[in-house]
Picture 1 (cartoon, rainbow, N blue to C red):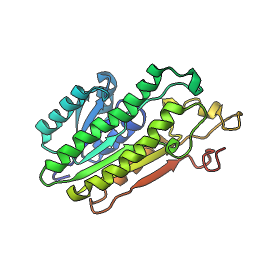
Picture 2: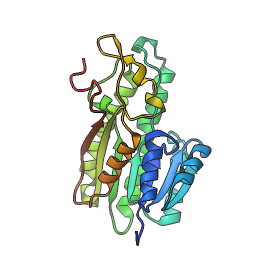
Picture 3: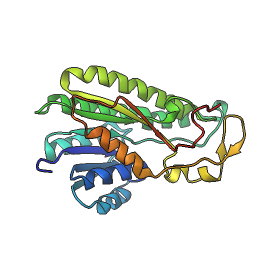
Length: 249
């Protein structure tokens, strides 16, 4: 890549974030790897074949951390072409009356406030850089369309991410900032390790669910990012073909 593009991947130490960061690295991008813990970020960086990786530990729930992250990006490269707004978390499945305010706030802080802070700073940089523009890809979830049982905090945040995506798409038009969302179902990561053995269904039964190679998600995100800014994948749903999502409930 003669003039390598820059991408920030949050939650790059494991799972979808790691696979996606590696895909960008192997395509020759300059990749900023962000996550709470340095060690898994360093592991991700060491797995890349090409490109150039910057490891920047960051807690996306802390505004100062996010500001420092973007200062480093600006200082090192002077621009950001792509943000994959991927960092997120959840709590174990429980009914709403079993969830404390602290647990609720914890999920909102990571999934929603963290996404807001990273998108805000990306938008600011993309709006003011030359040439102007860039792309923000938010990691939603199929829970942005239909919940699993006992997932109030997680599902609420993923519905909110859809609102963030739509608003950024609208507000970004004058500045050549495109925003899309990828909604993932059953990627093979540590979070879905127990799915093939059985997971709670809407009818109360426990049933095995298929998972898919996490690298397929990385391919999808890369393909969204690789479009010219005149085109945008607004929403993409990628899921294990036989998972019980269509018709859930």
